[in-house]
Image 1 (cartoon, one colour):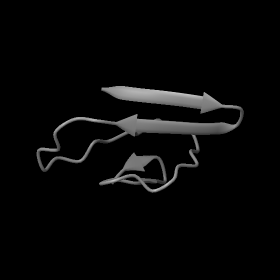
Image 2: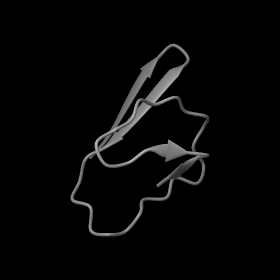
Image 3: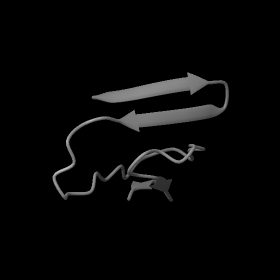
Length: 48
């Protein structure tokens, strides 16, 4: 499940799914400001 919350210039993306030891790559992501999530952070356009 992918949730996209857009509020003005603030773009927040949340991924909620079982993590099976494989990173999720978001190669074409815009510049995103995002608070620290439970188990992942967005850095330089890639889910790490």
